[in-house]
Length: 105
Length: 449
Image (tube, chains in turn yellow, blue):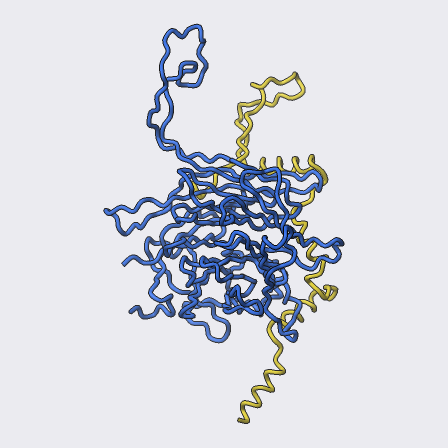
């Protein structure tokens, strides 16, 4: 019986793991708000996704990404800008923008 | 009797069957699988990925010559479902990631599925073509038009057999109905309507009508400063076409009856487990947020997944779940770092087996967990290339929480939190499961004796 009482006393003093983690977080970020589920937090969640300045900014960013991922253009296509009005044959072939899933490979 | 395998699910031994995808050192983001779903017969298995692509696998007919190869899944069709778009009004990118795929029950030779990204739901028809007409009068075999004045003889085109071609065509596009991000779609049991749910609203659609939908739930407050919770998942009852449920970021589930009112803002039932206020911490609300809700096949129960547990609720008891299963309780003492690396916001899904006797959900380190509701036994398995020999039996895994770590256990600090199993699917009638591990799809089956 004595040992049981001692155990209960110890339990009361032990902090739950969750509360211990909370203390750790508050120690690292003292300015953290009290309520994480507050409207600021939720509103940030509602607007996920990267914001761009405008559609031009978006298309430039996409083009940059595509150039990194795809192989370089065939070397025999020469640049034709500025000298004359290009014809469809002069322009480099448009690369297919969509790649098949590797699960289907 | 198998010694050394620890706890097993009754008689079921899970074996590796197949793995799809490549072993890349760096994973291309587009290849990350974002949804997995069997159709109603289990004949087809669909996956969607972050790149907006859908891949459908078909189970091959079982042959008497090879009884051990119990119907493997092979690629049937693949198509680009959604492409990235730009929201001009908000200057935000609309991701092409497929959030959910839901199959319609098969009503003719073609297959139909719904796939959705954050903003647009599409109905896809997948059909086979094994004949083509030949012998047109006005065009030749290459499709070039013939000069009508050169034609002297008329013939009747005939249908000739051709190599099987599977085509996917978008039959309906349901757009511009969601201001916020779609998290769920659910086909109604009437097979005429379906719902789409975003963070604040749920819309009811008729499959035939794309330019209108009914708004059936709207929890957007007049003043956004008063926003306290968002909708996280929604699903129709499997048999009662007037009933649906939706879950919230505060850990509650509401059941609604569409017969009572056009706008179902007032719930018919409200499921919430009382919380011990002394246990409340900064993390309480975040980890109580429900990431998935699923009706049982019987329609009598709902299952919910929050960050650390899976709960089963009886529709007739609103004040607490009837069963609670710990998925990875050892993470409770890691919540601080899981908050810092955003893992605490990971949205795990959960699934029922065909008889509602076993439930399954994913965890980290490519582990996934199964709970037998009858025997109360549970098992942790791993989706890994190391256990990918054909028909190799999966060995149960164990996480060591502290103290002495045994040889085949893994300690909490060694878990790889980038390897998360968020999406799994269970065949509707057999013990076949599909597990999405980042960019790979694993298929496991129970052992054939």
